[in-house]
Image (cartoon, rainbow, N blue to C red; front, side, top):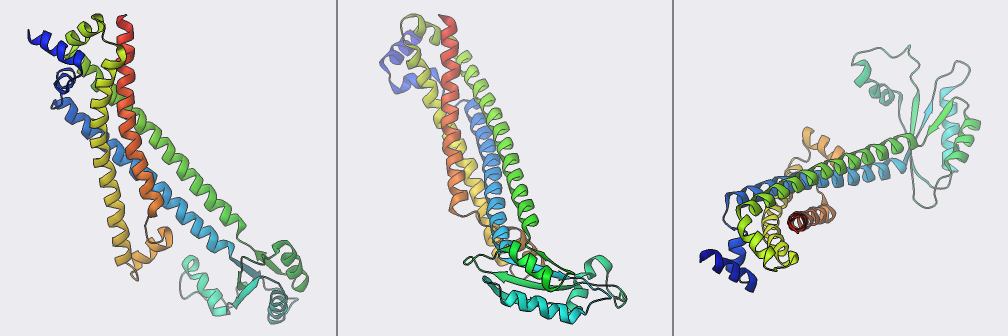
Length: 313
C-alpha cells in the first residue's frame, strides 16, 4: 500500500511525492552539493583570474601606449650632446608630445646594474643615452613621421614606441583567457558527469516507482521535471557556496594588496595586478557562473532522466 500511496501522491503532484521520487536528505545529494561547490569555486577563480589579467593588461598597454623612448647610441664621429639637443628640438616641435625627460649618463648606467651588477666601470663602454617622452591621446603622435624626423636630426638615434611590448601583452592576456576557457570547459564537463551519475543513482534507487509511473501513463516530462527541480536546488546550493567562497577570496586579496602598499612585495603586486581588484565585472562573472552552474545541474539531470525514460518505451 505504501507503493500505491507514493504513486498516487506523485500523480497528484504533491510535495511528498517529490520526496518519494528524489530523496532530499540523501548522502548522494550532499556529495553532489560539495562537487558542484568545488567546480563552481574553481571556475570562479579561473574567471576572476582571467578578468584580473585582462584588466591589468589593458592598464599596462594604456600606460605603454602613452610613452616612448629615444635611444641615442654613441658614435666616434658624432657629438653626443649635440645629437641630444637636436633630438630634443625635434620632439619639442612634434604635436602630441606632452613631456620630455632626458636621462643623464648616471641614470643610463643605473639601468644596466640589474644585468651587469654594481661597481662595474662603464666609462669605456659605449652606453646609449635615453630620452623618455610621454604623449597625449589627442592629438595622436604620428610615430612613423617622428621616427623619420629623429633619424634626420641624429642618424644614430632610434625611436621605440613600445608597440612590440603592447602586442606581447595582448598576446599574453589572450592566451590566459583561452587557458581559462579551457579550464572552464573541463570543469563543466566534470560537473555534468557528476550530475549524470548522481541522477542515475537516484533513478536506480526509485526504479520501481519510476517504471510504474511511466507505464500507468505519467508523462516523461512530469517525471523528468521532478528530477530537474531537485537537482536545480542542489546545484544552486553548491553554486552559491562555491561562488561565495571565490568572491570572498578575491575580496580579501584586494584588501590585503591595499594594506601592502608601499612595501617591496606590495609594489611588485601592484605593478603586476594593480590593486588586485576584479571590480564589478569580475563579481558579475562569478555570479553568472553560479547561476549557470545551477541551471546546468538541473538541465543535465532532466536530460538524463528523459533519455532513460525514452529507452523504456
